[in-house]
Length: 146
Image (tube, rainbow, N blue to C red; front, side, top):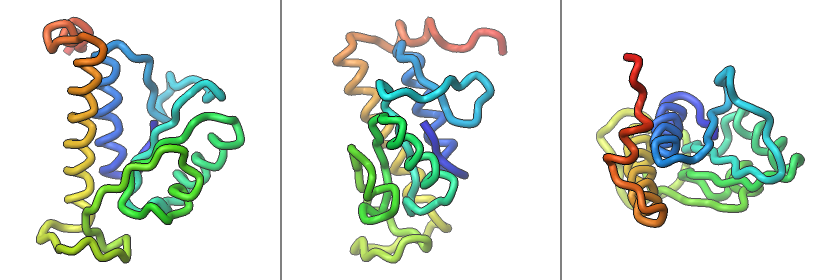
């Protein structure tokens, strides 16, 4: 999984919940992240879909043969053009020239980042149901050294 800036924080929150469910999940840049393989799903969150480091990662993931999922504002971005799975979030951002039909008083890409968290939590709820996991079961995988 990967994201830059505040989108990266949302990816890390999603990764944590996936781990709580019991999935093996890693975030690019962490020292314990293993190599990507053709059997993996690589998930990127990028409002613009043009962040240089994420574009490079997406291209490399495709060369490796991994499946690529993107959550973005701009479907027609460099990452969007190579993604196997694409979820478009209609949130205004100064980085993306797209008419979403509304504006936000929030600064920069805040609405996209907040929307990411809500989408990720909705996915977690669906996975909890399909995997037959409860919050109590998930809590057994919660960090216990803090």
